[in-house]
Image (cartoon, rainbow, N blue to C red; front, side, top):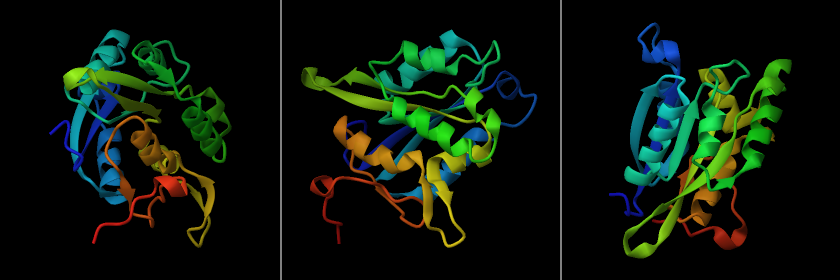
Length: 209
């Protein structure tokens, strides 16, 4: 399934000491599953989920496993991106990275600043990690750190819209499908009433009948 162009492999990782210990129910991964189910029109999804504590070694191991062994094209994390001592998700993500994609973090903070001034305390990053494939080829996986709250997750993915659903500030997911194209993943089409993917005209494929 890893090499099928008809399947988008996604890893969803919720990072929280208390949720992973069962103190409260995780809301990050369910929010992501719900949003992705509405936003992605094709290809079909295969999702792997993880709920882990704020431990850098555990986060690094989980990201490597999802990319190198599970073959995920996209990995989305939630939680652990603030300034507190145990917020180490960005450090773990950077430790497994081959390329930094700073625009994602910049745009997430731009969106969140429309709502709260403390958005400047967020340290979300996005990176690409390459995995070896059969025959010596390599393919990339996009890893993005998202906020922990369901409302913030949706806002950063979708962006800001006016009362008529017109786009005010683009959400980060608009750029994800083309990024996945460029690093060797499957062609992603979105439901435009949720999020419209952006590609240069030369990269747009005809819709299948």
